Length: 147
Image 1: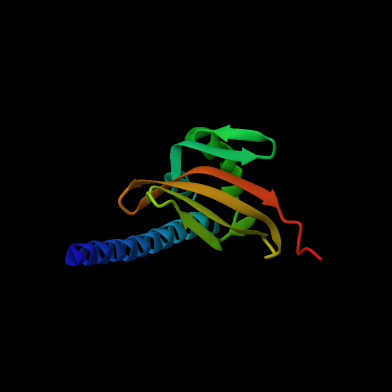
Image 2: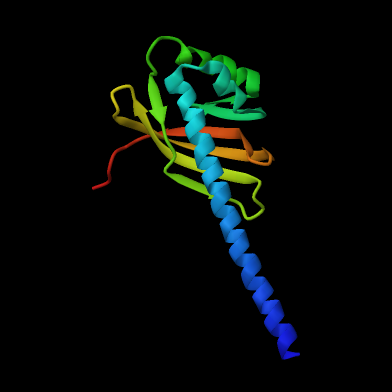
């Protein structure tokens, strides 16, 4: 009886450690995906930007919602016009559900001069091993440090 309990506990510990490792790997995937998504702005590559969008994507634009890949693509196209990127972003927080199929990335948004102007919050869905698509995106103005 004792040996069965010991084997069970060992199995649970090993599975827990493997799951933590997998979650850490998934967090890295999402962070890398978010960075690649942001790199489309710097590269001025709208087609690459569109490649990250889920067909069901919803981006919040002020008080209105941009619903669907085509709408988001169309409304974001002007941000990709011109030689210089009007803003940039990078993740500083990533969380992944224990199921491993949904993730949140969040971080600062900077204007062209490098001043923080907002924070973004994005929800990503795993659509194939190692492939994430953005399903929700919402930015909030940056109020600066609290005193």
